[in-house]
Image (cartoon, rainbow, N blue to C red):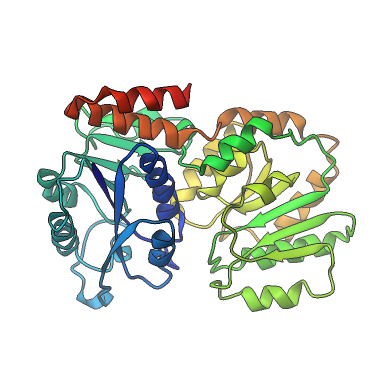
Length: 380
C-alpha cells in the first residue's frame, strides 16, 4: 500500500512541515506503507533531504508570485501556484503511481477544502495536518498537535461531522529518538549551566544573534551556550564573527536531530514552532519568542499553563528583554517543577499514535487486521 504527502519547505515557511511528515512517513514505512512526497521547488526546499531518507519526490515547478491566482487564504503566497493548478499537478502525480494510494496526507497552510475535494476521489482517504484552524477541510482525519486551551472548539464547522480529530501534543510528530530520550531524560533541577538556542533553520530575524548578545552581557563564562544555525541562514557569518573569542559559545550547523544536544541543556531559548514539542518531551524549560502569527496563540496558552516562559512576538522582543529574562532564570534556585510539568505534556510517541490511527482505518478497508495489531503492540 502507498501513501502520498503534499507538503513544502522554504526559507519563508521553514522546515517544520516537511520534517514532521518525514517522521510520519518513517513510522508508516515500519509497517509496510511506502510514501511518495509531492513538493514544490521553493528556495530552501528539502527535496534532497527527503530523498536521502529513501522516499521518492515529485518536484513541482515554482511560479512567479505575479503568475499565481489570488486566494483569500492568509498563506496563499506560500504555495507558488494557484490551488487548482497545484491540485491538478498533484492529481497527475498520483495517477502516475502504480496503485491507488491508501492515504493522501496534506500539510500546507495554503491548501483548503477546495484542493482537498478535488483530490479525494483518487485516494482511499485524506488526512490534513494543520495548526491554524483558519480554513475549512474535507478530510477523514485532522491532526493538530498543538496545545490549545480551547482545542475541542477550534475546528467546529470547519471539518466533516465524521472527521476523526487527533488533537494535542500526545500526537506530536517527533522523531523516534525523542521517545527514547524521554524514557531516560533527567529532569532539569538547576542550577542552569547549559543553554540551548535554536530559532529554526533560517532565522531571518536573527534572534539567534540577539540571544547571543543578551547572553554575552551576562558575563557568565561558567555557562555553556549551544547555538544551532544552519549555513542557509542569512546571518550565519554574522553569528560566526559574534561568537569569536567566546570559548563557552559553540555554534552547531545542521544536525540530524536536535534531541541529543537539547537533552544536555538546562534551559532553551527559541521560537514557538515545532521544536516546542521536542523541548517539552525532554522536560526542557524554555524561553519562547513567536516568529510567526500562528505561533502566538499556542505560545500564550502554553505560558498560561506554566509550560513555557513567553516573551511575546518578534516585534516586541529585543536584546534587553532576553537579557533580563535570562538573568532572572539563572538566579532561580530550581526549575524542577517547571521541568516536570513539561515532561508530562509530551512523551514523544505521537507518530506511533497517528500511524496507529491511519493503519487502523486502512486495515478496516483491506480486512488485514494484522497491521493494526502489530502497531498496537508497539504503542503498548
